[in-house]
Length: 279
Image 1 (cartoon, one colour):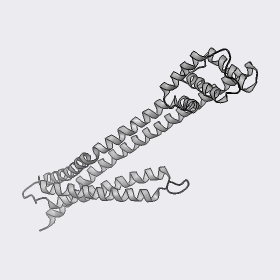
Image 2 (cartoon, rainbow, N blue to C red; image 1 turned 120 degrees about the vertical axis):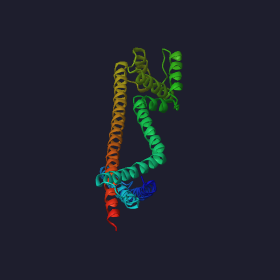
Image 3 (tube, rainbow, N blue to C red; image 1 turned 180 degrees about the vertical axis):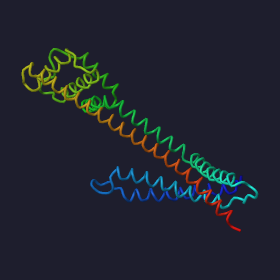
């Protein structure tokens, strides 16, 4: 083994990879745009990134393998098949050493990014079901804390009376109704007591009859429940799209690395043959 040639080829391959990836990132930023209707689409950018990644591996590992093949010591009295195998091994080691160096440098960053994406997707899905309830509680009481909202709802239960808030106190009635709706969304249904009391409050504030007020309560809660379900569905769709994109990128990265290993091994044999052909 000519480790000096292998290390030289790996360093060259790593430098070329960094240079080409930097250029590709610059082209990606130039082609993209934050304005709607301008710049390349997400599909075009993703396809371009995959193509550029494959081309980067072909060029960088091809040059690194060829350099390792040319720089290795000429073997005397070695069979042609053995020479071919050794040159292939030199090229493969160039790829392996360069990949190991790159993995040590950026592997932790990629793992952290993937873990952060997974945690964000899981939090998004987990919190989608209670997003509408939290929003309603925040709008009603000015509190973003769900525990505090539940405590206020329990306090409302303790202070309920047969005579609801009069028409002269619309803000207090609005806040109390908001907490009732938020608690109903969290439980998944409106209790009979909450429905009856909310209907009395609405009747006192608007002057409509109690049966109409009860139907209005049921209609509003159903709308809020549908909004929460739609938000959860959109969150799951976004998380699934992110999962598919990450899986596709990982598979294409695997394919590009495999292509790079083949190119480095093949180009090392070409470099070795050129070296042996020199008198």
